[in-house]
Amino acid sequence: MAAMAPLTKIHRALILTVVLASAIVGLPAGSQAAEPFSPDQKSALDIAIRDYIIANPEVIVESLNAMQARQEVAEKERQRAALAHMQGQITGNENDPVIGNPDGDVTVVEFFDYQCGYCKRMVDPVLQLLKQDPNVRWVMKEFPILGPASVTAAQASIAADKQGAYSAFHVALMKYRGRLSDAVIFQTATEVGLDLDKLKADMASPETRTIIQDATLLARTLGINGTPAFVIGGELLPGAVSLDTLVEQIEAARKG
Image 1 (cartoon, helix red, strand yellow):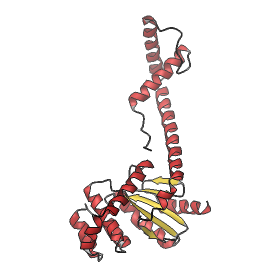
Image 2 (cartoon, rainbow, N blue to C red):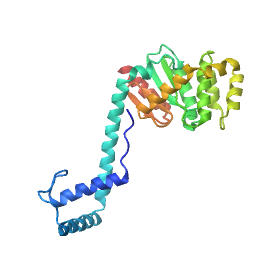
Image 3 (cartoon, rainbow, N blue to C red):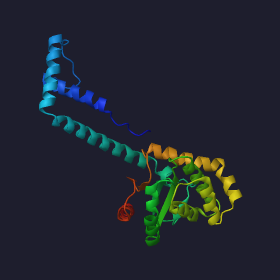
Image 4 (cartoon, one colour):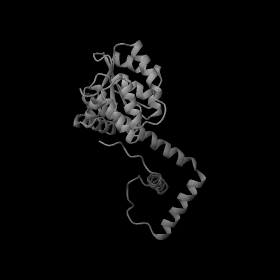
């Protein structure tokens, strides 16, 4: 299930022209006249549409705004249906790294990229939340979309989980300031005490590749095209959000 494609300006203009033409000639949209328009009638219709738009330019903006609003509502409904249908994959993939309380009563799922500046801004608020609320299970979805270094970092992070050091490595990478490179990633792994030989072997494993592929496919299916993105209960929160917003959504999920 792919994300709904937005209407182009040309598509919108064509739809608007049909609607205006139908209104002017007194026909419901989609219906056909009993007989084709004559050349003179077509010319008159073109002039009438042009004059109407010039005299009432605001109807174009109003029409496009209404269309955009309907499209956003439809996409939100599609997204909620996908969230409900795929809860098992979203929260229950046993291969996904987990920080916080593995047995927490509320699960938060985060899609992120190690080179995403907005994701880096969320690290301290997330750590603060997990400290003040020890009953939250935080599932990490590696979604490397910002280049080869992001993929390497995601692979290394999943491999670090095999050595029981996911959280330490994750936080260290997220707090690194500057562009990531293989050298930076492996140096960070050394600093947190990881076995580099084992790390590199686990990075190349089919299981690591599958974990990243599954998270990426899930993100695309849910219409997530950027990072960070959070799933709490049946709600998807795109982009960096405040600590207060996270707390409110977690409490809402607890109440059911």
